[in-house]
Image (cartoon, rainbow, N blue to C red):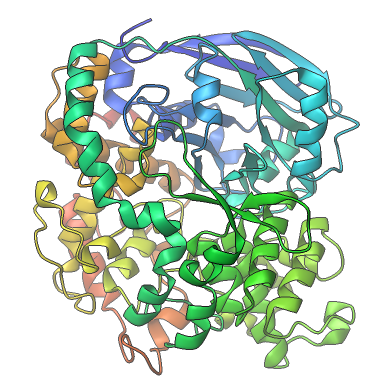
Length: 613
């Protein structure tokens, strides 16, 4: 055990139910941190990783806490769940906060590495380091909420759960893992719930009392006194309404996806589903992840149900709301809750529904294809389709494959309506509203992902002086974006490995503060420059994983709608990014070849030469 981490991973072979431990060194922890960083090294070293289907028994599934999880540092609660992406087999990491990551790390492990497939459904109980398997046959087929209720009666008090619903059991490419129901924090993207389902693993229950060793408690105390207040004050807007409070502002920027990304403005609709409108009637209480002063979570009363659940975040509001022309707050809250109960990625679910709505409107599909379902714009069809997708029934079975494969199955030029990058449906930030997001989406490791760069934060006037950004760039220019995207990707590449919430950027936490926190937790004499270099190393290591799986410049592209169709109205009307030029400059800044492959000199500089092929 070293200061800052236990140095120990739990290994589970589900074929044999063999339980073991794997140790990692302080050198590895400093080079990759934990979370998705150390997981990337494990994935790169996994035998025959390139040939493994994501859902095969031999394929890995990794749960890894960040380096700062279970410390007193603010908003340090993130767990990375890592596997191969179900739709394409490339890199995937799904992150989640809440309280489960802290509870798991309190069992004395930094992570779990799963392999194999259980003969019959099981769930895992980790009780302060004691590990056991339980029969999950009676839980199989239940939604996440009912599963949690049964687990409460079966495992005892004080446990927290990570659970798959029916979508994960049925191996949906858009299945998620639900944590902490009914508060619901979701590890959502890339079909991560299907990987868990493919292993016949229904749930993981955790409880623990062990403490992460802290190197310098005096420095930790000093930093908390100095920094917690300013972080809380600068993120007050997030506390008041969460991300749902930004819907109207995003619409004004021309960033809101509307009618499957066809329209540029929807002012009245955006107002109806903004947090400021929904919250007064539906809020039950505010919610905070472990050790978080921001408290952005909102627990809503679910309409027509005698229960509560997590209120819809901005991404879910946009994808299940505006992108489906659903301006009914109650239908939106219900749709969000259904995604949580079925264990579905709400971003991808909203995406496949809006895609099918446009295909239905254009006559590409008809009631003959959909089994008699009229997939028309609005909330009623959204709710109907979530049930079909979650259960893989009827036309929902096709959509459960994700938008890329669904379009391939349907054909008839429906691919033109699918808005995805590298097989992952893009989230609710329009790259025509923020040109930097065009480059970020094209180069993000897991595909259509906003979280790897978050460059739109800068466009909206949030300064980052520690990164060299003191004034907002023009969101519609292309010529200044490559260095911005590289810097932001390197910086955010340490967040999941550290276990940090990305809203700390809004709280003015830059690499200098992160280096101070690292010194307090681990005792390492670490600089802001080392933090940024580690972020660059981790980003490049994940890129190498993708290169092993056939990714190159040919895949660093945007969907047709984003490069051939400018928005007809709104603030971003007529904007289309010059992606080709930006990619050329980006590759040069990265030290990559024209094919998007890191050059040998760059790998040596980043101490990644051992992974060169």
